[in-house]
Length: 162
Image (cartoon, rainbow, N blue to C red):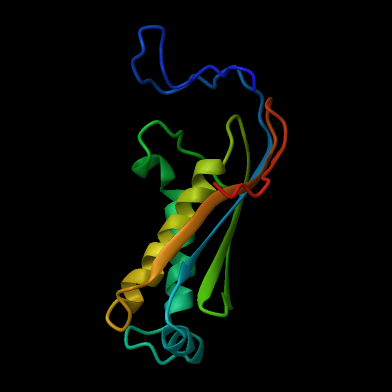
């Protein structure tokens, strides 16, 4: 694998925000995923709408959207971006909820961090809203699935079991 330059470090090795002023605006998209595993009883309560704190899925979806919009406030060197679209899909499956977030924009930098932050916030919100009935929930597999747009081209993840 070729050696990559860390763009968030200056010549002296100090962290800095990357200058994107010379980059062209392009259509950019990122898709990230993750999951939260839980007891089957917990999942049944979520799906049936009987969780004491209310509509868990709607709240997690809103949390994901809000987190994508606020990524630059959370991750120190991220640029604030005008997002065109954020979708948060929550799919109950067996003993977990699978979270998939898609983020798009037209701009000079990518939206990978926005998608990853949205997945994280949605998972943490699910945990927060359900912890009273299941403290053993586990958040897993948060990762980038796809990114497109920009100079570095497209990326599509391969599953790596390591």
